[in-house]
Image (cartoon, rainbow, N blue to C red):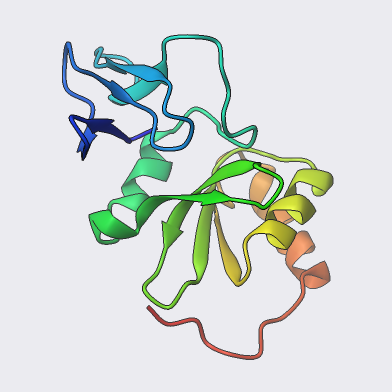
Length: 149
């Protein structure tokens, strides 16, 4: 996760910092090595958002194209289920950036949870991705309106 609460203020990870997870209020520590992107990690093995994945530079780069206050917006369902949208625009549209494959069940689950939403997909991660991505577009539902921030 890119942001945690440090003394009640939403902040990015910096070396040696500790904070609280904005979703579950558990303790998190900053991971600021040289291999992976700087991020926050729960001290425990707790996973408060089951859809959470390791973030790539591609993913972070897309999030950074939007205002900070739109990035990593927390959502809590009436059941208590927690999810973090990659971006939630001022008009309430959720944007999910997907670099790695997910199951059709997870895709449908996210689409049902975040409404309205749109996907930004890396269709060229592997050589075989682009043809598969193009084929999937033929089955995708079309949105009749333009999404605007």
